[in-house]
Image (cartoon, rainbow, N blue to C red):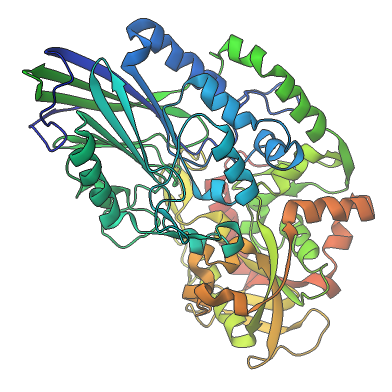
Length: 578
């Protein structure tokens, strides 16, 4: 439990509303829920953390201290990541969106727009704005047409005469995540200095006694160098704010400084962020304020039974859709195999990508840290494990040199240069836990969904060479020479083409702000392309998706050294692997 006795701040201003006395409010926060509305995973009997459990806990506090003493805020990424979100985003588009009904039922006071919420596209998030009674906030998403926020920017609560201001902001790095078509008509401003400016305006106009800022931004390093993660930058600079709620990076974190508490609950309903504020009012003024913050682990078995019953028909509709058979899997798919070299999982993504007529090459990465799908009948539910995101497939023009530089940069983010000593790590891992993946000890420094390899080429990656000299491209998959000064059409995700992971910009030297000039084709979400592949072919066969004449082949070299070091590192990352 963190505690700080706050000196009278800008948010402690004179007002005529509240009566003299002591007032205590409980703030609860969620973020990066990613569609975990239900506690079931739809197949089998396994349960998980969910909003059902969050609701049970928050309501227990409401019953204990009074409804008006509780504030509930979500910091974004709520509309993507699970079957239920997908179903109500794109399949049942007639009903009131399930998330809108759940949020209103749970009594959220505000929800912030996340980058993955924007990724659902205008038809989805515009529909949510219309249907959700709870305010959907993003004060830095500026409408090109009006020059004002496209979404609502703040909400004022009045509880027992106390004014509570909640300001919400989304991630400003949207253009490096998503194609313009998904956020057309908007410009996303940096949180600094905008948040402070907006806070000052709200304080001047509304004179709140409590100010909460919720941002869909990672906690970051506080060095001012990361547009995508400005949490600590704000924490080190904001004035007049009591609670700063962060999100996006899936890292549980709590901190306090002077009169400000920072809360990041992590993701997927693993924790509930919790803050307590106690104010003493005298002669209409706040003369003292005490703040504290912590994280409350969610107990997945303690669910809101009334809520579960109320939304049971929705759950059944989602389950019926996602357990329908879609084809056969003839080989097991393990995403962790991708860290060692070629594997059936990434081969599948390459094969799907190279199946579009414009593509000659492809880039792909493992999208889950340790996903597994067993052979047998595939259901639509399995496609969410194969491809959990709504990324589209783009085909982009790149020169041979840009492709080579891209690959050099990609491998530099997950593979070390080694010399054959016994104490070396070939993978860039550290003996630290990673709350993003649930690793208790050894974990990657980087994020596995940025560990791209290429399809359509024969090449080696020499792990004894320095970065820039490691990728040795032999030929295209059909045996024709690969030329640095030739132009090739490369299939990749919309996330990567738009700048996600920085590989296009930092590796290939491509200005992703002007990527439209290089895009030669756009296709639907990759999960849908996998579904179409199954409808056409009936099955996923390792020999077909791994055909060297289509996807080529690559290896870490020298193989004896690379294999030895790789086995050691993989045993650290996955000590229980079979």
